[in-house]
Length: 278
Image (cartoon, rainbow, N blue to C red; front, side, top):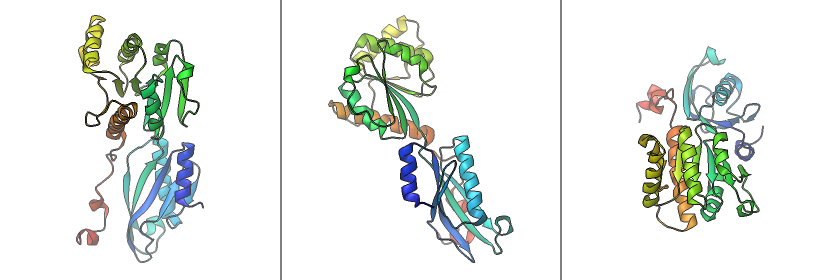
């Protein structure tokens, strides 16, 4: 089996989801090594946590997490014995961490200075990016992996093809186009997050125009403008890009970064003798 570190790097580079399984507690007559890890993909195992029925059961749980698209970490406590093919008792606690899952689908409208600073940042995250502009010459020669460039003379037409729950970023070179894109995105109203580049003054103008078109004020309130974290200051393209990327990370971590409802606190999973020493 390949080393789990190199296997994890390879799978992440390929964009293939996997689960990292780690022994975080083991007590028994023939203890395994706490800290041992293995990586489970849909079709392969990398490295080992000691083999046997426990490893087989861990593989089954990990692949079930992959099949159902679980994003949160999971802790499982196993009592060693006949159920796991062990002759003696003991307890093992395993940590399951989904890795390489796509956290967000992002549509970036605009390949100007800020777009060119932002998209490489987004590409380094567990995201898939659609980068849309009407001007092919604005895209850089080297496009980051995980980014699909789309040239369309009518960028608004691309809104209809966005996946539900998409993160939408509008930062084109044209205020009129920004307004049409905003109207199309808000009309769908099934996005996870929508940010529009601009000032508070631009937001007020857009709110008036959208209200005149009959948009519900509660829907318009979902628009982030100005966008980005307020604590990240600066007007340079990279400073704006970092601010916007930080807000997107914070948003998708709320949606995907929490432990699953079935994950119990670790103290409840550890053997009573160990808890009493804490």
